Image 1 (cartoon, helix red, strand yellow):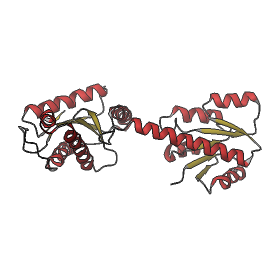
Image 2 (cartoon, rainbow, N blue to C red):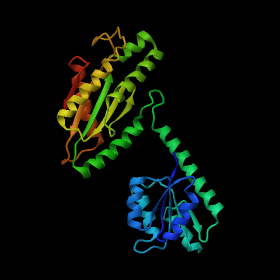
Image 3 (cartoon, rainbow, N blue to C red):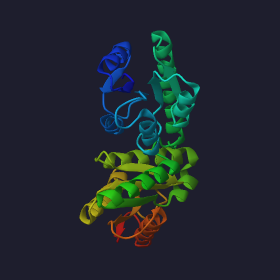
Image 4 (spheres, rainbow, N blue to C red):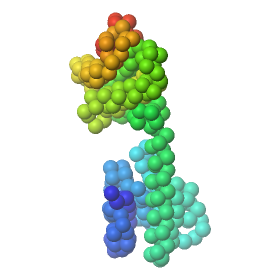
Length: 298
């Protein structure tokens, strides 16, 4: 898949010149107007933005500042391409958040080399960032990803007015499983359970993370109460249906999980800790009621 470049340039002829320069190697999108370019950047999420400075209405400095302020676009590298060659203009551009500054008239090979280097650097840092968000044993998200996603979903929920569901999931009697079968089998069990939970989630916005030890968390935006109950029970059933033998379990003869969930409706103040506490209370109810069951709490 080709990397994506967004060109925000009010001169159609120069924008086409840049597009022709990069189109063999990259997917190029052109915007000849700043506001349209900002909207395009937020939806396209390009790997690099080439931005002119002198444009009608909003100038490139202000556009770059807005890109760097928004959550969705702040990490996209921006290169200014401008006829303003003074040191003061270049300094102002870099201070606005641009990663590089190229003065017109451009040298094609130098510009192509700079763009290639910055895109490769972004891809490298993205790879490192993604690795830091993944639990190495199970291959699903880790606690850091959970926190980042929860923060983002709470902000989104406050804007949309739609509910947000959180499910906490604990493998029943996992210590006994490890003690009787060994940690290697325990690791295999964790991987299988993580996969089963992930497979039970059919909507693109849902995500499972490893919360710690044998505990998992599922974040599910826009889930009403009745759907939440069905979702919690589906998670529980998918793990039980793995039919992994667990001779030391008092809940069943196979590996099972207890699921506690809560759904928060917008309208009152709350934070991530509040939501986790409610889901943990529901999980405690599920475990104290015999395990291998799900429980929802308002």
